[in-house]
Amino acid sequence: GQFSGSVDASSTRAKDLARFEEEHRHWLPDYALFRTLKAHHPESWRDWPLGLREKEPNAIDAFRKEHGLELRQRVYLQWLAFRQLEAARAAMASLGVGLIGDEPFLVADDAADVWAHRDLYRFDATVGAPPDAFSADGQEWGLPPYRWDAIRDTRYALFHERGAHTSQLYDAVRIDHVVGLYRTYHRPIDKTVAHYFYPTGQDAQLAQGEAVLKAFAASGTELIAEDLGVIPDFVRDSLTGLGIPGHRVLRWEQEAGRFREPKTYPELSLTTTGTHDTESSAEWWDELSEWERTSVASLEGMSHLAKGHDHWDDPVWAALLWKALSAPSRLVIFPVIDVLALRARINTPNTVGPDNWSYRLPWTTSALEADAIVGSRMKLLKKLATQHDRAGAPSAAE
Image: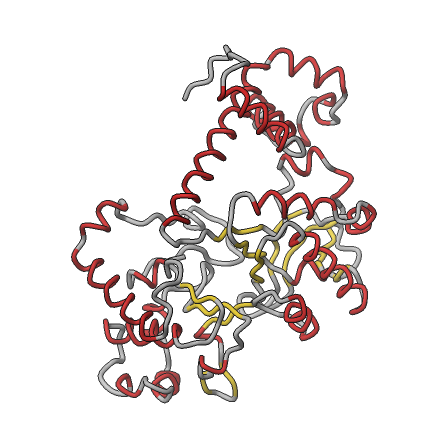
């Protein structure tokens, strides 16, 4: 649909559009205005003409008047997109399939949220991650930190709104970098002080994290915690107390040089073979040392991998998926890369480039449905799931 600007206000569609605008008034006007401003001033908002940068009423009113049709069109497109997603979710629900969304921990500096609500963000530091398995120096994300004191003064209204918003779109939401809601890793821009966590002290961190997550879940959204990397024990204990499942990634669950039996994972967890930040299971298997393959083969039901499977093949593929499905975890999901036994990579952490987040499946959904090899894999996957009483659950593909 092309928006012409001519609307019959009495029509059913026009009334629905007006209802949508009212329901989403806490973000939609700012978003439409920012996107339209960016269309005419593609540089960062920090480099916009002073009146627009500082949201001076006269400058904003003049811009709205000059570009009113563009503003309406952006609202109209959001309405179409939301209604299409709602229809898709309803269709999925009728098939017994749930939809999991993703909640980013923070937003970019050059974003509508930051431009419109500068009082909720700090600009003397950026956010990243401390040193971990991915980076000896930690990760620099270049994102503006929240002003947690200001957010606390609003009784975490920002997260109440986000929770209510996502509950309209998804059956569950994965909270990215959940530890950052308890304590955010600040990297001062002027480098006069060392990197630091805020807030300081375990009691303050615990109080903040739980307040944020409770605000987000107030609308009934089911939460999943991305709790990978360097996570203090008190954060994992807190998530357990809140009833929020964390991740169990098969390849990372090791103790004393041996892989843990998935059947020992807690019920309050999400088990998976990998994430968007890891290489595919095929690449992982081929790069394993001999002792690691021996450790995998020593797991219950995996002894057939002890010999003759030094390189990735279909038996390895089936065994790893079967093993993950054996966990008592509330959720078991697989990256689509692993479902289809591909070797592609979706993202490489702490890097920026054309290969990041650019992966697309090389087939259309109709081509996948018609492919005999894919069909055989799906039948086997359903058989594996049935063996662990998971066949009636939502689709395993992430």
